[in-house]
Length: 489
Image 1 (tube, rainbow, N blue to C red):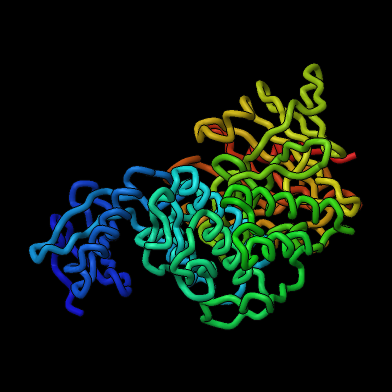
Image 2 (image 1 turned 60 degrees about the horizontal axis):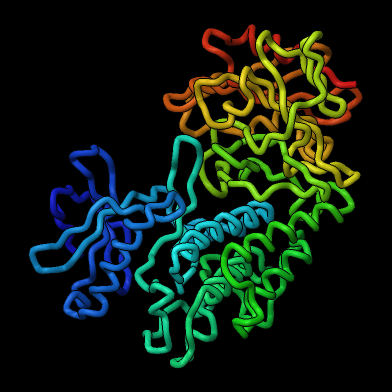
């Protein structure tokens, strides 16, 4: 295939991929000075008015929805030969299919990713759209200063639900396509996408994984990997039920059921190392509900103790680049003495820098032997703004016995790289009887400095993790003073 020099005003650099209906090129936007993906309708289809209209419908739909969980459209145009093209934001992290060729993802990572995909499909369902072709090749990743975005792509086969009927053409990929899509008289609705989500879950969590394979195990013969909670397996089996009426009604209901199943599994787990409750390592996601975290997350816990269904940003090895700062759904003020300038969460007590306060009572995703969330808190001049505003300094402090059982402080810090930042040499410091491993990152965007630190608590009661965004002018001395103020009782 000959590479064109230009498509419209865009300089073409290379081919990104080719499929049955379209070819995608890497281009350069001269106005924005930014790389873009340009999708061009294949030559053998541009004369087919139905296919051409579907191609344009995809661009119009994505432009109208303009959601961060979907591929974004910058512009549309037409080549001299009449073929339409659409200019899209570049998904520079590749596809889920690409990543699965390297091997299966850790169970906690796969569960988080599946929930994030379901959130993207839920955007379509809220706008009355059914995707109908959810496969690993249609799940893309795009880097972002705050972490990696998961994108639902390739809506060329999507239809408005009001127009979806048995008169539409057969659409979908075998292995992921709902059974009713083979029935020329069936009505295709959101439950077809629930089936696709369930089959993605089987592909991510099934035991019969094969290198390079893009298809999950056959329906009716599903075996799940060790560590997949039975409650989660039940959700996936319901989602892939042959009859649409037996499935979850839409993607949001599927996502809620997945979260509930995961929370139930954690509450009933005997202790660390039980599937979903196993803390994600550096190649997995860290829990978050806002701009996300590479480390811990204070959790809002209700009567059940289940962790909230939060947003995810994905870690460095298996699912993308590391994110910048550990934040999350913050609970109310911790037990704190404003007279003494300290804050407490469980056995953790932190001496607060002048003008700082603390919120948070538990570390989402980190469960102790008693099945309860392990303690954590956030300290900052404004802890709630720290979750969203890179100009606000602050720190996350968490204690985890389950993490100490699986790794060392040096190993834990190594799991938290910041790929978009410059790393200083790792240093060691002893503060308040704790030997700390400290890594400092200087970043061009977002928070200018992020410090990762970990040590073992006295008597090895757990691994203490501190992630610091120091105030302007606060460097080694500030970090060491903060670490010296972390006490365990």
